[in-house]
Amino acid sequence: MQTRIQVQSEDFDLNHELALAEASAPDCGAVVSFIGKVRGNDNPQQPLSHLYLTHMPEVTEHEISKIIAQAAERWSLPYACVIHRVGKLPVGAQIVLVLTASGHREHAYQANHFIMDYLKTEAPFWKKECFANGQQHWVEMKHSDQQRTQSWQ
Amino acid sequence: MITVIYLARFAEELGLTQEQLAPNFTDSDALLAYLRQRGAPFSEVLAAGKVYKIAVNNIIQHGCAALKDGDSIALLPPVTGG
Image 1 (cartoon, rainbow over the protein chains, first blue to last red):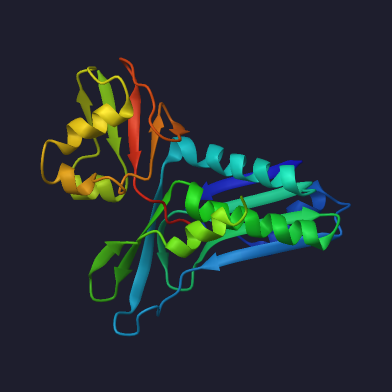
Image 2 (tube, rainbow over the protein chains, first blue to last red):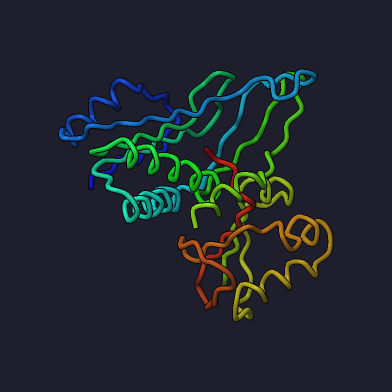
């Protein structure tokens, strides 16, 4: 299995990542990509300006690699890529890319879903919402995210 | 000495990113109990259920972990990435 893990402030380009996947795992008939983006209007009364994302640099990439390895134990996963951005991310910005490539779609779909669910509850990232009116607060972990992760166990 | 590292909201709410403590804690539960008995803001910010995970020497641990002189222990709030 080949993996590509990046934690970066810069944006990423899906087409570039698809080309890397194709070059790394040319025989894969199924490629699934998920991109998470910054939503602006969860609360119309309080529009968001941007998210601020922080992480634990010495630990994050290792945790992501563990999540990918767990996925590879369950599905055929010749190639997986996770790119997670940190820093100041305005509304509409891309936050995260999970790209999985496999011989058949079910493996690529399932592995992608699994990796994303585990990223939400296991990888050491933290989001702060910074609103247009200057207020800001740290996002609370969602119980529904924990339930999704537990549903794989 | 043990180095205690506070991450994300913990650092902000405690106004502290890290501190060093004498190594009289055998495990992470004993350290957390010590920090909580300091009173506010530690007792509130680090209340049971608010510390999602710990990392000892940059390895994330599940549950209570043994501590020894020279270790660094990071306290992680519930994660919200993705």
